[in-house]
Each structure stands twice: as C-alpha cells, then as structure tokens.
Image (cartoon, rainbow over all chains, first blue to last red; front, top):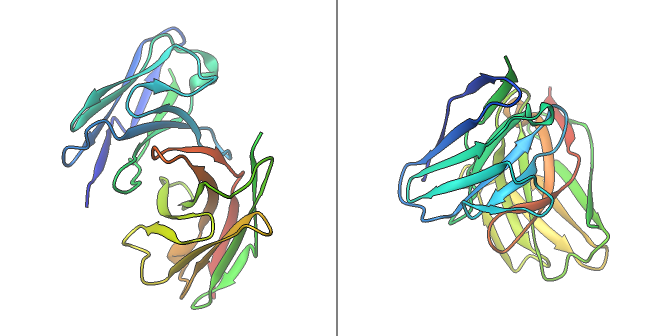
Length: 106
Length: 118
C-alpha cells in the first residue's frame, strides 16, 4: 500500500505569510496528487488536482508542485479565509488521504 | 450545479449493517464515478470506495473490501453504501462525492454522522 505522509501536522501563521505544506508518498506516484481544504463541520473542497492544476474558482494564491514522492502546497499570502485543515490525496491507483495539516492563526 | 445529499440512519447497532444513500441533483449519475469517504470524529479523511454509475466498475480500500458494497441506481439518480458487521470504529461522518476520472473528488455532499453503538 502507498502511504501518504503530510508535514507538519499543524502550523501557526499570520495573515500575509507564505505557507508551505508537504506531502510525501511512500513510493513514486508520478503527479497523481490532489489537495483539499476542509473547514470545521464542512465537506472538503478541492483546491488542486494532478499536483499543480488549480480547480476552477480557487484563488491564485494557492499553488502546488512536485512529482514522484515529494509534493508541496503553497499559499503565497495567507488570507483570513485560509485558516483550515489541508489534506493531500493520492489519485491513482487508490485514493489514500494524508493525515492533514491544521493551519491556525498565530 | 451538481449537488449531493447523504441520507440514512444516524444510529446503527454493533454487528448490524450501516446503509447510506447519496441522492444526486443537478446532473445525472450516468457516465460518472461516485465515491464514499468517511471521517471519524477529530480524525483524518478515509477513502472507502467508488463505483461507476450502474456498478459495473468499482474499487475499494482494501481495509473495507470484505464487508463493503457500493451500488448505483441510475433510475433514481442515486448511489448507496452498505458496510456490514459495523463496529464502534465505523462511527464517522460519511461523505459521498463525485469522482472525476482523473482521480479527484470535485463535488461533495455535506456529510452525515453515523454512530455505531451497542
């Protein structure tokens, strides 16, 4: 089974900060990696698919990069609405999620 | 705009079958893949499995293969989850979602909490 490991588990940052979240796969997954944002009591929201393609309607301050085993989600300038939990998700051959990264206000 | 809505019992007894339905509006389930994901309280998301409209194609998380069924009903535009032999560990918010063929979930239901208790 392919394992997905996110880091850090939690992160404190301020509005305007640049933030990077990492997701590591236990083996080469090419670019089969997606990112979601989840707020308390709400369903996850797709942000980025296939490593770096921004879902329609998602602000351009979100970006994704990587390939193989190491991937990153970057928020270029944090906005108040961005404080949430972020998950990576393997898209092939199965759909394993990472453990999540909780982004909190400093 | 595609919308999904989960429905089913909020309380299931240990050893019984957990059954949920996801009704889809704003679009047809035909031609698409549809999945179930769950989230135990305070924990991360866990992939359960997906089905292609009528159920001829499916895939399951190996952790659930022996006791899960996911089926589609194109006549009612909905799909369902059945998880046999429920235990307290199956207590979670269950989400249904549309799966794009490229492997991402682009439309989600609001989620429904199912508690498994004796």
